[in-house]
Image 1: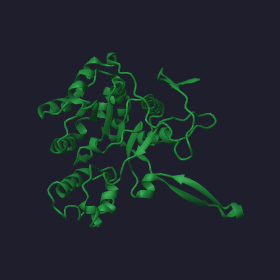
Image 2: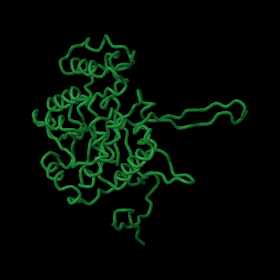
Image 3: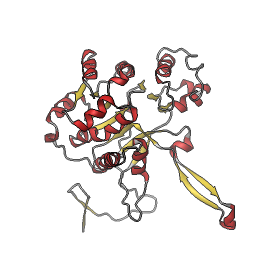
Image 4: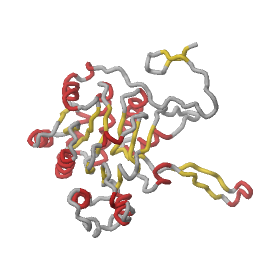
Length: 325
């Protein structure tokens, strides 16, 4: 007897279960068939930029020009060549070209162009779920990056590539990042007062690696669809709800495999400012990236992070508070 993998059109033989403790389910879904007809112009760019069909992608408009310059300057310093800026306006396209930064400008699209040219951080962030679909259909894996991120090492050397999604976490320690059993106490229930719940801090939708698989594309479609129907929704909340909510009556959950990135290699700014900078041992670690996702004073902190990790200024982070003032 054979079983067909949904959406793949491939037949796979069913297998008998092995001895106790040896059985392991499939985590790495097969990639989609490359469809160059989707966007031949983008396909040519990706062929030149990508390494082993993988690349970093960031979306940017003129509102974030200063941070974008810090972003690609540190990518170049880290020796990373496979990256691409999706320019959302003429100014950013010209700025990238003048700085020898690989850039792609989409064909005109009123819905995307209006948000891309004038939108704030959250509005622009939501566009990525529509933009990335073509990259996946063309057969490329994408490491999506916000531009409030500094690269210190090549992230492709630290990916597992065993899941549809590998994402950095908003968690600030092992429990919050990787999950824990949280006990809810309801005294009125007497003997059954304690209810066990499973908790995990959300994935950060500003930095994740996504492979070109059917579940990955379904995730993009689900998130983009909900954001268009629910314009007040936050893209990161929707991203996590679609990834984690299970099937239940009236709802069919997404069957995507996922992996949480190491919080000390792919470091959010809460981890850095609350924990790492105060710990003599952790201060010696060299992260792959630092993401200033927890702090609104991004530019000043980004510059200080560069001073600390690149220029070795040991007191560069000291004058900042843990959180925002």
